[in-house]
Length: 306
Image (tube, rainbow, N blue to C red; front, side, top):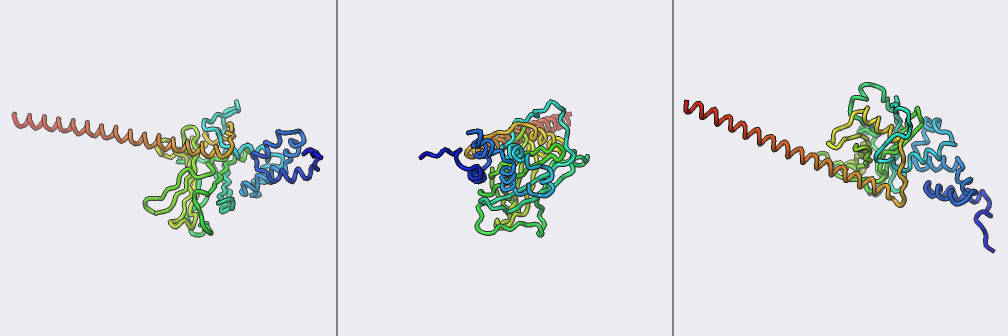
C-alpha cells in the first residue's frame, strides 16, 4: 500500500526537516502547503542559524532577534550580497553608530574560533581612518591552537556584520579561501577570504603561525583597486548598502566559485593598474632625465663658446 508523505505524522516530518540545511529546507517548503507550514516553524530556523553560526548564540545577539525573525535572518546572511549594491529603500541611507561583528571559523565542520565584537562607528577618527576590524589580535593569550592535521584550504570563515539599530545583517566572507600565501618576511601563512562589492575589496585575512599550528590573527579591511585602505565613512556606506541590497542565491558551491573568480579579476586589475602606473612613472623619469640632459648640454655649450 502506497503511503503519501502527507500521511506521516507532523512530528515525524518536523524531525526530518530539522536535519536539512537552509537551502534544502527552503526548497521543501515550496512543494506543498503542509510542508510549507512545517518548514516555516521559527524554532527550526532558530536552531539552524545557531548551529551554522554559533556566534549568534551570544546573549547580546539573542536579545536582538526574536525566534520569529530567524528565517529572514538566514535569508540575509547565508546568500552572498550582490556585487553591485544598491539600496532597495527610497529613504536616504543613514550610517549606523555601531557595527557588530559575529565571527566563526570552522575546519571540516568543527568550530575553531567564535567571537562577537562591537565597534563605535560614529567617531570622526573612525570615519576618517582606513577601515579595519580585528577579531583576534596577536597577543599570546589570545592565540588559537589548531589541533590535529589541518588543511588550510578547508578552513571556512563567516564574518557577519549586524546593524544593531535596523537589525539588518550581511555576511561579507567568501566562506572558502580565495587565496593562501606566505608572508615574505615573517613566514606566516595568510589565508585570505574576499568579497568584491562596488569595486572595493572586503578582505578578511586569517594569519597562521609559521608551522600552521596556531591562528594568530583574524582581521578585516576594505581596499580599493590600488591596494589603498578605504576610509571608514566610505566603507560603512558600502556595507550599509550591502545590508539593504539584494542577495545572490546559487547552488552547489557556485557562490564560492563566483566570489573566487571576482577576487581573481580584482587582483588582476590591481596588478594591471600598478604595472601601468609603473610604466607611466618610468616614462616621466625618462622625459625628466632627457630634459635635464638637454638643459645641461645647452648651458655647457653656452659657457664653452661664450
